[in-house]
Image 1 (tube, rainbow, N blue to C red):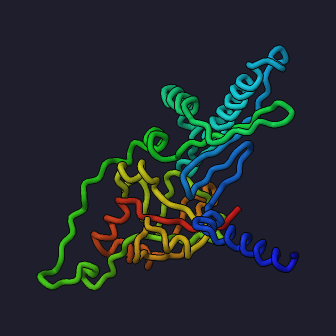
Image 2 (tube, one colour; image 1 turned 90 degrees about the vertical axis):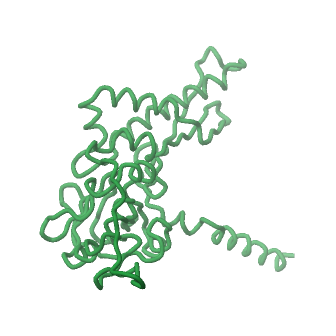
Image 3 (cartoon, rainbow, N blue to C red; image 1 turned 135 degrees about the horizontal axis):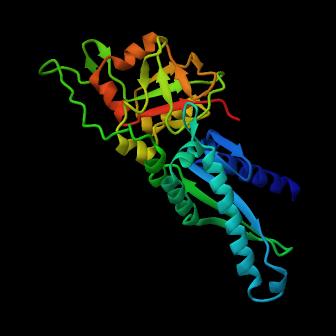
Length: 287
């Protein structure tokens, strides 16, 4: 009996490991914080909260609803705390813009209050634990991304004539995306990451992207695995893969690449178009 059971158990374990999406989940860059986490790969913030009902409601029909309300309030408080620490760019995080603009603070508070429950658990001791989740894209990105990220008109491309190869321009490669490998640099994710060449000239940042794409999908995707990044549809089937040389020691989210790699990226109008569409993946060491 035991011999017959072992292969089944082994198969179940293998199916769990190899199920669709399992490998991708292992490659997700998740930043753990108090009472929650920031999943930079999926572009979501997730927090938890625990609540109990007041003593007067114990044993009454109101006990569970009141405990649920308390747990949700705690999760929302944690969510607001977490998003305040999210890096926007360089040395700026969400708390900085909240301190300078009361209307942004009020808007974020409304967004947090409207966040839907992702899960809830009723414990045997009467407490309730809930998890809530908010996207970094869409309304949140529209609110906190710098105003200098504008809507950019399509970049016109040209070919050298009939029969020319649209994948080549003046002998230069035209790529479908950019992958920056920052492993070993202790880089940190941000809503508005910047990439510079060795001379300090910006290669990628808010001046290069169209706001539509930045708001809808974020300025960059993140992964802990180079192969997963290469297969990501964000960078399509012919990405330029470059190695980050260093980061800004004060922010860790500004990345420097070689002048040679920067020149490849600047070589064609098609490459500038991929930047406009935020077709960028950054590979980072896992926490």
